[in-house]
Length: 403
Image 1 (tube, helix red, strand yellow):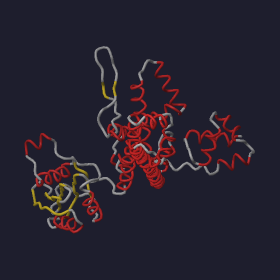
Image 2 (image 1 turned 90 degrees about the horizontal axis):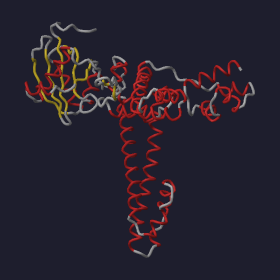
Image 3 (image 1 turned 120 degrees about the horizontal axis):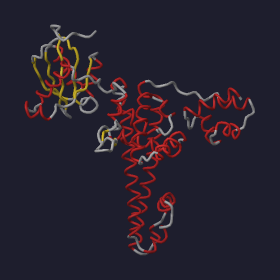
Image 4 (image 1 turned 30 degrees about the vertical axis):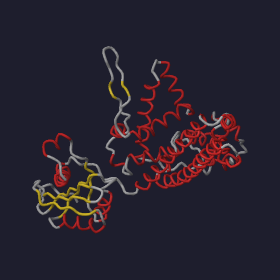
């Protein structure tokens, strides 16, 4: 039951979080300060902090800074105790200049934000932490692998002529395999032996990172299939883009009040850029840039191999729009689609019946593909659940029903 702001005996809590300590403050329904205290960021400290708040009265709700970082521990403890937790952003610079900056002040301001209704965003769910950890590990591994490959290419540029000419025409994949198996000890020249030793080390590092990325991809896919399998059925959405979108919404779709708020959160809300007789919009530079990159990746994938998107792009080009403008429109539309999927996800598209239905009617893959206008490999992958596009599944199922 929601407690009214003027119920006596109830309090509002605010917590300023740090790596080693948290500062807890409480206020009454009239905004009067009841007390504040510092506690360590340990299970015992969390229990003491909640006990400190409840000693002043019945806790209505708590505002916590950084519910997905330094405040994750106290957020979990408060939720386990049945308390309502809201995420609080740090005070604006103008407030800090006017009222000062300290841990007690920040804690009281967090409590005031809850009391006045400024803090309305629910705390991020703890189950998103594992997904974020896997995604961060994969991203750093990809960067390290790319750095190793760049080092190999740069090292070959300054290598002895014999070494450079031997490896310069190999494709990247073949180059890594060859260097990882080379035997520097067979070379008598000191420079060649040392350079090949370094190149072999970099190539083996590249292979090790590739194996690590593959393992992380499998873990990411398994986690997403458990929590939001419908995202992987959307055209152009892979495990990394799906993971980033889930991380962005914080595992709590109720944090997003509207489709427009999600677009702004992802930096895809159109920004006016008109001047004189020119009326146009440009890409936003704000929002979560990693979420924006995920939408950008989806847009590029659909521009390459999604027939409806390719037709749309061609229509926009015929109207004289540039590629950045087309991307802005596409990303805005994809943000709208992703918002619906994240807040009102459809049930998993079952495809287990498609292949038996086709085989029961003695229809070949080529005939089915020609009938609905796709490649035979698309039908095969769709039937096996390897690559699912909702519109293809719908068209294929309708055609099979009437065939």
